[in-house]
Length: 127
Image 1 (tube, rainbow, N blue to C red):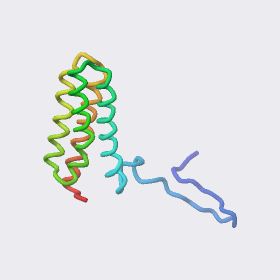
Image 2: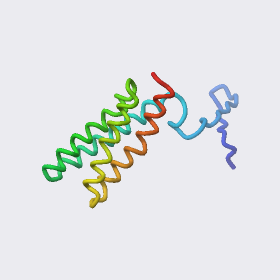
Image 3: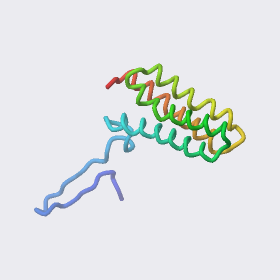
């Protein structure tokens, strides 16, 4: 039966008790301020990859939109309103133009859903 702590005997025979980490991994502490903006940038890069396989007009829109999404969290560190505008401008048009597909609108909306709280959090916790 597990109690949530691990009892481990070290080489001297003494019992060492370790506590479980606080909260889910990556949701607390200074590390979450780094991986969430990286996640938004990866979703923007995925938008660019998806745009390459589209027709010329959608490919240009998808590439520009993906680059805007990739830059948004990093621009928002200095200018939060500009970062939010880049994120919205990079996700909404691509989701609307590719409404008929399955993956592209979901990637764009996921980037928006993850990116806006990240940018809002940067306003409260500037680096």
